[in-house]
Image (cartoon, rainbow, N blue to C red; front, side, top):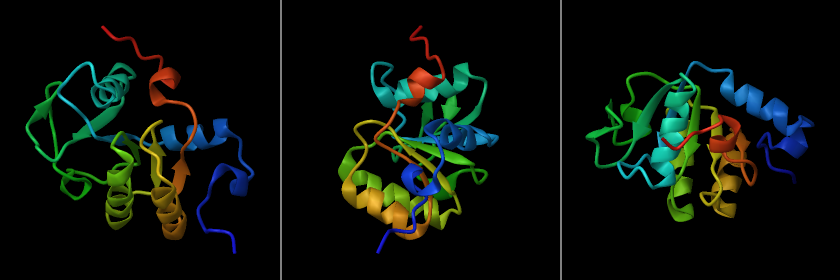
Length: 146
């Protein structure tokens, strides 16, 4: 039996259509946001900021990242975001998928290196819109590391 996840192959959508649907929202979260400007979790957050998007950093330690309040988890965000970029170790990603589903967030993008077969299957079981094993948001948003 095929999983219920709307993966690109099952949707019949192109990658461009899936990316357009992801970016169609007004607000986003970056799970795995980092204070270290050399880490991808920080660069992805800054790519959203450079693109002029409303974005919330998510880091279990809280505090501030790039001048923004960092939230410990998706349930703590001040609003339900449209999409989540996940930049976590693969063994952590499945928990993020479950958090997103509980928070009513339907659009997920597992950045390269965050994917795991288990997390992809979980997203499928939960019927989430998922981009994985594909391009990085840094490239698509034209990130400049300044």
